[in-house]
Amino acid sequence: MEVELKEMLDDLQSLRQSLSDPTLHASIDKLQSCVDHLTHLAKSVPVRRSKVKDMSAEVVDSNPYSRLMALQRMGIVENYERIREFSVAIVGIGGVGSVAAEMLTRCGIGRLLLYDYDKVELANMNRLFFRPEQVGMTKTDAAVQTLSDINPDVVLESYTLNITTVQGFETFMSSLRNKTFCPSKEGSGVDLVLSCVDNYEARMVVNQACNELNQTWMESGVSEDAVSGHIQLLIPGETACFACAPPLVVASGVDERTLKREGVCAASLPTTMGVVAGLLVQNTLKFLLKFGHVSPYLGYSSLKDYFPTMAMKPNPQCSNAACLERQKEYILAKPARDAEAKAKMEAEASTAAADLPLHADNEWNISVVDDSGLESTGGTSSDALPEGLIHELPSADEFQKPPASEALDTGIVDLEDLRRQLEALNAD
Ligand SMILES: [Zn+2]
Image (cartoon, rainbow, N blue to C red):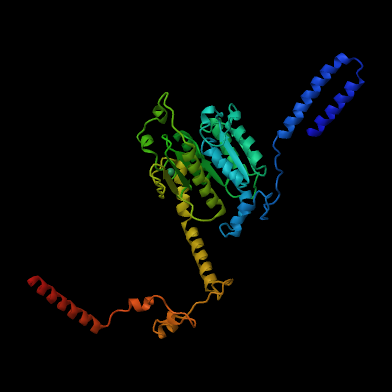
């Protein structure tokens, strides 16, 4: 762009020289100052980084992935680069969803599918991610704008729709089924769905879609008073689905929409939302890259800094038909699962039994000393000091040595003696 503007300036200059009528020079000067201004603006436009073909572990300041690939070197993650193969769908790009999307983008996730029907408002500025100049844009478009600047390697798909409408639900389902990104993938076209919506109705829609597609998903939520939140892992058939244990209000048959009081607005804090988004993406990374423990449920109560955890089994009387079907499949697959677990345990046992040194790379030459050798010296091995050195304090062994039985008797005699002396004193 700067080159074109420079050419335009040169053309204007030659045009000015060729004009014999000096009254026209003023217009040319005005045009020239406009082009100057544009050149200045073009220089201030941030430079976007180019795409990176492979994730490199090279430790240089210009490598956007060096700190992430270090997780592999530190032994936390076996193969970090696998993250590029994964697709994650985020439903609801609000206070939690947008931050989760940014975290996954910075982690170099392969593909993100973003769903929201709302627009950015000034009332959203107490949260992270969106900026005032994005007010009026759809949340999905604004997110794509920011995320593609942060990491152009991530494939971004934006869906400006309401999943609770018939049309929206159909598009949602077909986008989850689409396998063009990774045709060899089993099941649906995404590896995980993250629900970051703020109402029960939308959660039930995500639950329905995931139960139908046998799709693992994670649920997240922040309370209306902004001081607590939770994340939950839902594996159809294996853990409780969202309809298995509905919240009390819904179970008692009250329409959620009637609960929303006119003129009363829910509170929100960037802190609680940031914490919940962090917990959600941490669980996502552990689930996708297979490290650590993936929490089935993790709560966060900020007033007491309390993090409750629990696990919930599916309800055999769940009202969701697709959930019941997945439960049946899960029970039927039990023998295969047990056989697989047994084979894995046996393989691990045989590897451990193989005559391999426990620590092949004994960098510090640490060796194990036989205890019996120490005992034979009467527990005084610490007395063996190099020539010229003496102990300042009695050795611990000496201190803890139990007193001999005679000494004990003497002690009792001494006490008796003391008692007599005291009685004599009192008598005076
Ligand atoms: Zn269920």
